[in-house]
Image (cartoon, rainbow, N blue to C red):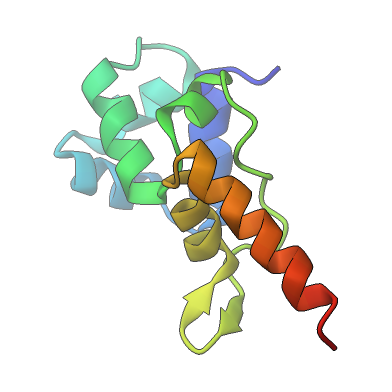
Length: 114
């Protein structure tokens, strides 16, 4: 299982961002952010929360506690209109269990209506 520092580095790289850009978003220096990624400094909870919101992933995903995020299989590509697969996955993660079941039923219904 990847460490938090690896998760945030991978997300940053998957989004083609520089450490400075993320550091600016967080309001910390580039050196401080670099220390987070390199494991030289403990990552504060508020940083985990901010990065979760920025990348539209759950804190569980960042901490390795959840499996709701499929990884980075071309999630930045446009799926339909200006919506990316990343946007879709984020929206699905926000559904409660009943809504997720309903979504699966609807998808199965659509697959059989061709």
